[in-house]
Length: 481
Image: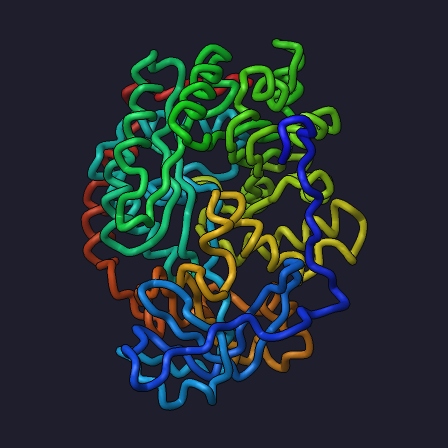
């Protein structure tokens, strides 16, 4: 982008009628006389992208991994005699880039099902924020462990988290092998210390866990963080080369209240405080209105939105993330779940299917959002949204080896007439057999290898009475929009 234009490139997006053409994207694998590969996956069908970001599928393929990176995507016959430290026979399975949960609060799995069938204001003020005032670092750690186990089993290899006591979450990520964009959340009610703690966390953990952890500044939202603090955050982000991850225009009510009280929409508040001049990941955006689109289009930073449709249905919000309008102005939309306290699960697979279905209903057009487009959002657009578009999001030489193997031999995924539709609308997260990050197998044949779920569940159960106590009358914040 040139400073003078402020115009974002219009995305090409996947085209439904065509598959990637041209030669298969690959490097010739090393021969038997060279060092063995770390991992060879054979006999699978591989989801691939061409140079115009259209998706297609390579059948009877093999993936060769060295040093945590995809070395080649080639034919299965080519690697039959290639020595490898580990081999996976993936016949009947599809290899996909690992899914990315672009906005969640992983430790909130500890509150799953605690605040049900409530409007947003009561959900926050009567249950969630009083309970969160009880949180200890150990509660956060246990919640993060359970969440990471759930995500690994659902084929999620990367997540963007925005919560409290994030040192504990970073430690869990380092141990379990996932990839994450982490931010220490803060409110203006905490004073300058909250913003300073968010910066200190981001600087301390940036590039940790062998590079698997990236970090962001994490002001909660324009309705809980003042313009002064948002402007200071934008300046810190620019000074230190950090992205910003926050909630904004979560629902239409927030936008209407912001206009009535302050004369600007939440997105306009981000623009006037300089947040849109940073690389920013905006959670939800169902309250984005037409007047916001030009601001997002000319934002000088990398701007992305994360959509978590299941929660919007539960809260009965009248609008959803305007995926089509955002795509038209070059803003990537990544898939997300939000926290399990509102969404009840961390299943990005479900988010992919719901995004497709809700967009069809909202737009009144069955041709939008198609299965291939949904897969594009789940892979490349989600990678772009969390700032990892050059690292993950596709299975190709030079990319980090973050991938999942999906078993399509079950009765609910047969027969396969349209593989993209089968993956989006028939397959389930439980069909993920193997999850790999940086070439390391985190789950193999549905067996978790880096986390002890029974131990976590036992201890978390013992701690729940103290965690869920609400008689003290405290809240971490007030929801008043």
